Amino acid sequence: MQVPLLDLKAQYQTIKPEIDAAIQQVVESQYFIMGPAVAELETRVAQYCGCAHGIGISSGTDALLIALMALGIGANDEVIVPTYTFFATAGSVSRLSAKPVFVDMEPDTYNLNPGAIERSITARTKAIIPVHLFGQCADMDPIRSIARKHNLNVIEDAAQAIGAEYQGKKAGSMGNAGCFSFFPSKNLGGFGDGGMVLTNNADLAEKIRVLRSHGSKPKYHHKIVGGNFRLDTLQAAVLLVKLKYLDSWTAARQKNAKDYDALFQDAGLLPDRVRIPARKQTRHIFNQYVIRVERRDALQTYLKEKEVGAEIYYPVPLHLQECFAALGYKEGDCPAAEEAAGASLALPIYPELTLEQKQYVVNCIRTFYELPT
Ligand SMILES: *Cc1c(COP(=O)(O)O)cnc(C)c1O
Image 1 (cartoon, rainbow, N blue to C red):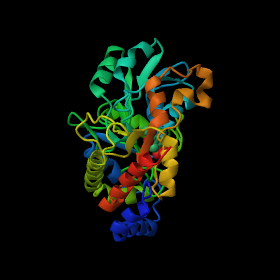
Image 2: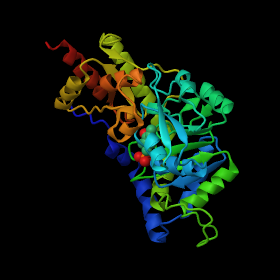
Image 3: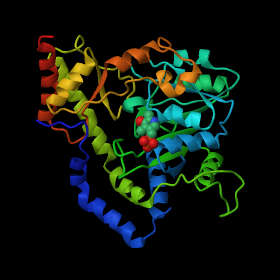
Image 4: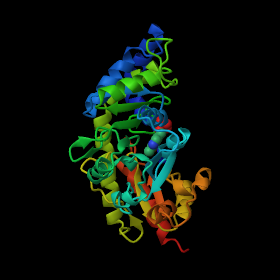
């Protein structure tokens, strides 16, 4: 049985006529840059996440970059980031000549460990970027109180967490700015790159809007240097259709996670063979379903032979990446992340997954651990 890590064709088939009509409408209008769908998507996503302002951006990476730019982060500034995350969280900081300062994760949730933040704060620290990894919110209350105490900005990297909740508040609505990605593999994915910044601060929203089009306002008059960070109208049109289905897709992902949990339990794999991260927040949206296992690489190879897609998020924590070598981190600096990097494996969790497929995945894993080593 084939079980790909993600099956976007299956999702497209369920909404094809609506999507095709939305694309065709943009094509007929030939209004490709900042067309009406962009503004509508901004309003809808902001509303969905309980935020006042939305600014459509070219990608999740650019959303982080433009939020940092708008907050004035630059050379000689330091920004606290988790070491266990996708590269863009820290890459965006470096691109502004600021310094990412890496903090370890909580071993059980994979999210930024609030207890490890304060010792990394210096006089140069300007912001914290908590990441809501795999679809579960970071522990925002202690993070926000540390930020308040030290007068730091909080930029949420909510790329994997659209619709996730922390104590009734939506991911991306709790900091100075929340950054989202519409990369095709995210829970709300476009037909290419896309992203958004949400904020409750009207001045910040306006600054991001101006930065998005070369810092120009009015047109051809530039008080600040921005870039081309616009979201395509075509992407916005596709995303507007998909947004209507997001909650039902999230429910399907949550059901899949529950089924996996039960199947692993029934197979006798918990907790010795398969460890499941702690779920402390009320609304986990399961962008990824990650397990921790022994002999991870061999299991991944075995699953591949059995036509099951499984991916390693992430094999190298950022403090050990070659491009950050000059920052002087070494192995042992972030032990929880280093342990996770050697043992984590993401399994297929996409909404259209069938019960037979989930059973097959768990059976394959059980068989692997029964094989003689
Ligand atoms: C996907 C992702 C990004 C970057 O988003 P893109 O749209 O691919 O640029 C940033 N941070 C995290 C945590 C992500 O998962």
